[in-house]
Every structure is written in C-alpha cells, then in structure tokens.
Length: 347
Image (cartoon, rainbow, N blue to C red; front, side):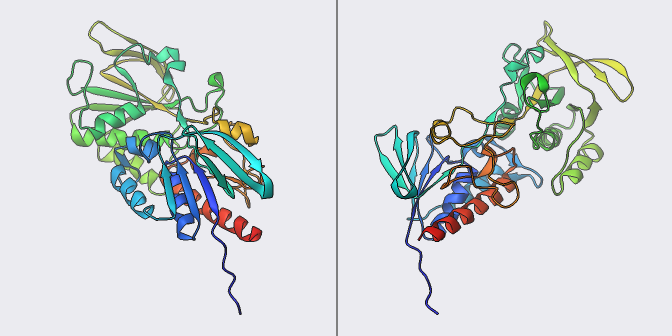
C-alpha cells in the first residue's frame, strides 16, 4: 500500500503561553511549519510568573523550561515582541496575517492560544485593592513566594494572612457567573507554602464553598488543614479597610455559625479569577464566536472542542475556558491533532 505523505503546511499560532508552546511543538513534530507569535519579549505567558504548581508543588520554571526544550525545532519560527494587527481570509481557505513589524504571513490554519487575563481586583472597591498596600492579589503573592520575600507593609514577615476566594468569579455584580476552577486550589497551595516557610504565621482562607475538582486536589486540601493547620472559614468578607498601623481590618460573617466576624490581618490576598481577553483584534476581524462567558465558543463541546465557527481557525488553552496548566497542555495537544487532521483532509 502506498503511504500518502502530507505536504508541509504553515500554521500561525497567536499566543506564546503554555498552550501556544505545546501546540507548536506538537505541530512541528508532525512536520508542519509554525509561526509562534507572542506580544511579550519572552514565551511562557502567566506560567513565567508562577512559583510552583499544584497538586505536586513542582517548580513552574522547571515545567516551562521542559516545554521550551520540546519546542526547539527548526520547523518553529518564534516571533516575540510581535502582535498581529490584521488577519483576513484569502483564496483557498488560507489566511493573511500582518504584524506590527511589517511582516505578512500566509497560513493554512490559525490557532488562537491567547490565554486569559487576570480579573482586576480594583473593580471590587469594597476590598481596597490599589488603595491599601496590605491588599494584594494572588499573582502578587505568588511573586513574593517565588522571590522568597513574603512581607507585610512594614517589611516584616506577616503574623496573619487572609486569602479570600472567588474575586471576580461567580459574581453577578461584575458579570462573571462562571467558576474559574483554579482559585480554590491556588489558595490552598499558597497557604501551605506560607505555613511551610513561616510556621508561626496564621493563615485563613475565606470561601463560599471549596471546589477541589482535580486529581490530588482534595488530598492537598486535607493536607492544608491536618498538617499545616490552615484555617478555613465559610463566609464572605463584606468590607476591608486599613488602620493606622497599616493592618487590614475586615468585616465578615461566618455562615456556618451565623455570626459576624471582625479580624485584623497583615495581608489580605484576593484570589482573582480568569477573564477572557475580549480586545483580541484577530478574533474581531475573523468573527470568532464567543460564549456566554465571553471565552471563545467551541464548534461542538464534545467532538469539535478546538474548532471555532470559522473554518481553519482553532483554539487551545484558557482562551476557551478557565484551565489549569495540566489541562492546558492536554488541550493544546488535542488542538494540534485537530489542525493536523484538518490540513490532511485538504492535502
């Protein structure tokens, strides 16, 4: 039987985070030429900002380096500090992409791997983010842990840290009805890391409910309570304000006992959720459909998850829905196979 050899195709991947890197490595390994286009100066996206990953606490830098090593392929052309400013469909179901560097790239398929943006906690004015130095978001805490620099506003190791779940997720007031999936487990991971380094620091997690859906997540939650003595309070903080000492005074309700609660803390950490980047120009120009949550909508949630409503345009990673790194990598590999199959049908 004669083997059919597919002609090398050109794929443009917009976004050089974990999804874009993994999809590029998979497509290049299948023999295709890939342009990996990233607007920042480095690849990695949000993964570059993380200290360690759940559930096994593996260093994020180690995972990113392994991914970058897999992406060292002559079939991959990396374009950093580059943005696509125009994308149009042209003859033969191909695409012409123009960059801000004056390049024109003609691709047989386009993969959107644009990721997500972190919810801006300043939109929740009652918590004082951007007003009080003692109120930070989860990525800022991650940076403190990564740099081994957990400090309060006085430059001291905090005596108490409160982590508040569900900022910008499951919140009708900001128009985000969905769960961001990773906030609960991120809070548990960060709480454990604080206690591991500073056993005398009190750590509290305030939550509506705990959603530990992934493998080993429940075990991590139990470890936080049983081994590290992290305190979990079922209740929502209604207000936060700084006192003269720079401490944050919070008002809340413990909904398990039905009583109001007043506490002081050195740091209030807002566990911010994921939002779709709705300003992406390529999506607007091509008319890529979005779902109710404003992330890209799949052509079919079951059999065509990585396909969009535009033929030849695919998605991967957290631009379709909130995902952790493990799911992002798996989804990127699935997107690469979908593109490979699509291009094979056109050969």
